[in-house]
Length: 156
Image 1 (cartoon, rainbow, N blue to C red):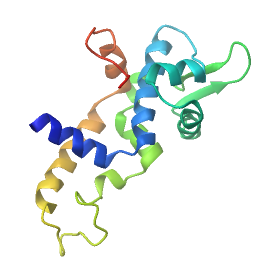
Image 2 (image 1 turned 180 degrees about the horizontal axis):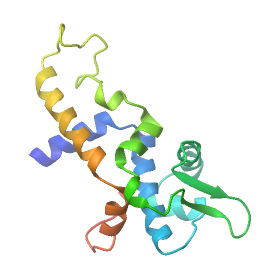
Image 3 (image 1 turned 120 degrees about the vertical axis):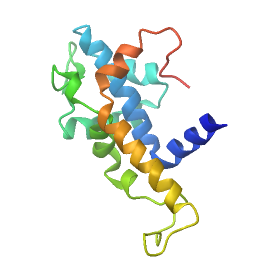
């Protein structure tokens, strides 16, 4: 039951763009560790996402200097830094969704605040704080390394 609750919270917190961005960055990080660039088609196939939508998400990540993009027959995407330990999920989320994940209401209300809380305000505040800790402490390198485990996937 707690698992499904966590999944619902994550779906409410992250945009579809952000979900694809995290999945794409994980795949790209794995390939970057192997010294390989990956094409847009490879990425969208691997993470089971529409190619045009994936391209827009990757453009945001390039704009925020988390990825490098090279055109041409030997081009593709690679991490901007060789140190994938420095790229956290928080950086990816910020590049795509901004900081709303740390401010939003659990019920999606615009007027929810400390002075005018919604019914789940206090509980969701705890969840947001834990989410923030997890995003800031989880690196893309950690996720890429987990892809070696047989029960871990990037597809739905």
